[in-house]
Image 1 (cartoon, one colour):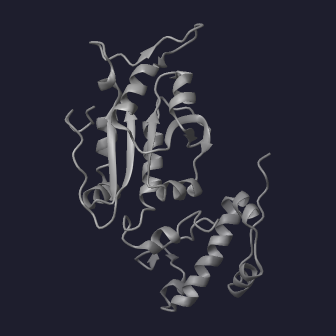
Image 2 (tube, one colour; image 1 turned 90 degrees about the vertical axis):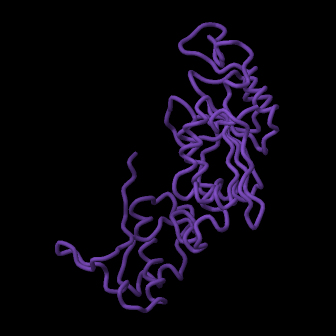
Image 3 (cartoon, helix red, strand yellow; image 1 turned 180 degrees about the vertical axis):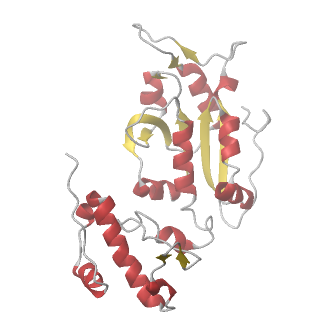
Length: 267
């Protein structure tokens, strides 16, 4: 089966120092996915051989002249359903890495923990649904599970797939270049990332915190941790409730004269 690269066979991935994390994407818009995977961090990771991303065209697995991949649902109803034949044929033709996950609003909620799981899985595949849904046999007999980026309905799984690919890809060692980058980001320790400032130090009467310009790296680290606690309490109290606040956390807050804000529930 051909990939999205101008309809030609999948090109061999660049050779890197370690085995690349292989990610296969199945879609009726493989060229668009492939183009997005060439941008910025993902593009550099593919070029260096850290990520082996392959985009497969479901239409190329069809047998009819019109490349039909959808049909009306049995029992009636609005919209069209992705047919099982081309999807099974596409997947079976290339033997992609497992698990094969269907992008679906009812799937497991994608989060940073799941991204970390997939980043160390050795490889996985994503199936992008389209139209009104997919034939149930795809879900029960072909896919190993399903994943959702949130309680929203999209026209297809391509945008959701790119969310997963980028979140996972940047956790692969070497992709960011600085391993501390992903370790310090939001959700890595159950907290949102601390606020950031850059030059100029003063802008329209708004000054960057003195502690960040002090040169005292140990103090900067403690302050950032304290600010991460404050931001998480204000913006995602659910995360802080699940994580808890330790005595060491409270000492950091006291050191910098900070308090955790109380946020009323929206209910």
